[in-house]
Length: 391
Ligand SMILES: Cc1ncc(COP(=O)(O)O)c(C=O)c1O
Image (tube, rainbow, N blue to C red; front, side):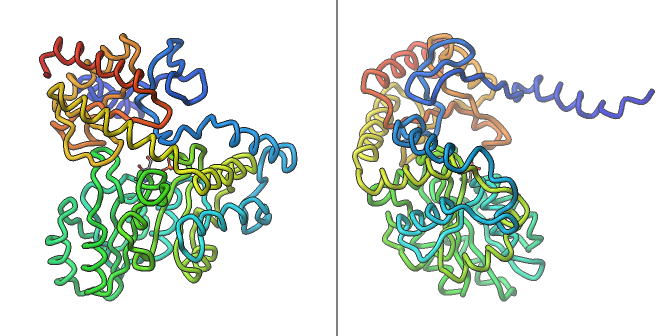
């Protein structure tokens, strides 16, 4: 009989042959500096738990209380079964935190990008997208069926040129705020200037900026003082906020429209009461205490300086995302597995997540790490890097 799945087997084999087959480690503990991965206690340099909120008692207690009061599941999509009081409270808290008129909470940052791009843009419109934008932006653009023009990474001159020659009436510029694989920050002010000149809307995905940039982690718009000039902000609740979920923040009219048109809002159930209550607790913590953001930055700068001093190439990072760029995918994998054997969990990342020949291990520093933890990682990086001839 014909093997209809032969193409899948072939593809898996070629991924393995190219060193691109992804093995997922199994985590047996809460997210914190040291975790249990595949049954071993390892230092965690993989998570986006920037502010150490993922296992914070205040979030856990809020989730427990909501679970008791509202039960386990939302039972249907919000537009049909109604929206929990907690969803409204979270949206109000997020709007306040980001300094915008309104916000809509969704299941994830990925779903936020899918929902908003498809709702706003159609076949007659044009989207200008940074070539290194996140996969969920790329997929949102595909769903919208709008014309897409990629501009060179963070290159505002290229963007300007492309905006100028566009014949379309409705235009949208989309950029990641902090680029997730390199840790560099988008030139958002210059992007906003260019977009304003040509009447284009601007959308920024702040997934790695919130909790990191701006006053007490209010994000990239706050960092550059661009309040009122960015039309659409996308956020995730799964990174610095420590839980799960996503949102869109912006003007009241935008959010009102998304409640009518965003398919991820209309056709998919919401986050649970427990998740939502934990998210509210996280926003409140950020509003009352900038200590975790300060600690995050102290750790990030310390670790970056130490790894650079060892001779590693950390690329163009300006944030706690610290790539250690190795180039060859096999070598990056080897470095990652040698580190894992030495109790440091830092995942190798290769094509297609990053360009071919730019494989790396991506180290995520957080507020949960102590100086001792970071020194431990640096020591192991030194040993493994020397053994592999990288440094
Ligand atoms: C820039 C960016 N946007 C969106 C997402 C998706 O967020 P979530 O995990 O909430 O779906 C991510 C997470 O990987 C991201 O890095």
